[in-house]
Image (cartoon, rainbow, N blue to C red; front, side):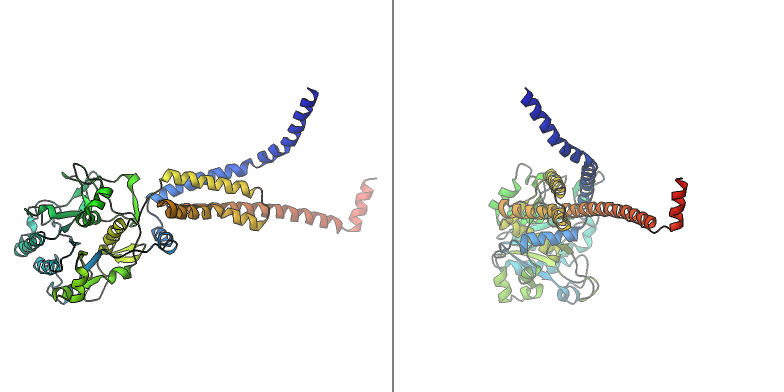
Length: 451
């Protein structure tokens, strides 16, 4: 018993300094925890507002393209563009809405190339947003020509029409009326597909299936393209049920790899070349999913910004290229499920606490700086490994910035502490210097006062 008591006393004596050291640093750990939770709260707010989107796009481009050059494969899409020549100087006569009789002629010309599908990335919604499109009665003749051209093409070629959605009074999504609502494509209705053209604010996310308040759920334009051209792949992704595609929940968010704008431009042909049956153009359209879109400029011929441009990980690109990116990502399986937000928060907190623990054991400035930035590097590395090995995407941009701010705050606190210590030492040194350099008469006076 005596030896046991001595062992316990020795253990207590050895443990006491460590416990005292930990207790003396309780305020540091409290600061670390408070800053960590404040950072997580700030991250939650910034993420909900889609903040710092340009930085997110850049980092996403680095992860999915520069560090992971898997190659895009052969394009399945080609584009027929109503450009400045056709819109401002040609038969379209810079009119809004677009001349539908001219669109009918162009659809007929595209159909002659025997494409895999024809996609109209053009907004045909009613000016009223609802009803049966009666407000378009001024254009009945040309509307009839376009409808008939599409119906005729649907005999042999799948047709994909763009739909529009808007937000209702209760915040719900509502499908908008368009010029095809009261028109029957029978007996070729099964060869006509529809998808909404509105895009997510964060363009990295593939536009999903939605419930737009109708009898059937509504595909995005890229999903409708996939259904028309590759129905088996569509079934795997969209999981169609009694109401059509299955609306995506938060757990279904998919991120798609982006193809460089230049590669899409190489497969883009002016409407005039297709109308003239250019051999290269017709060869490129053959068995491709052909998207009919607009690329003219807003002010006049080659003046002003180009219509329908969107900032994306592939820089500024037309909306048709965005939809085509999603389509190509699904066809080539270049899509990545998102890691849950809770898992990201947990990883971030663990990284911060580990870094703080290591910083307490390192005394050199260089070592502390290296460890301070370790959590941010861990976030980036973890995201890259997930993408490479599990095909999953972890949004690390905001966590990295929060960790960077955390490091900055810690360094400011440390610098203030060092400044306070230096100030105290400097004051003490001045007092000693003053005592040493005091006049001899003052020193003698002190001796006399002591009697």
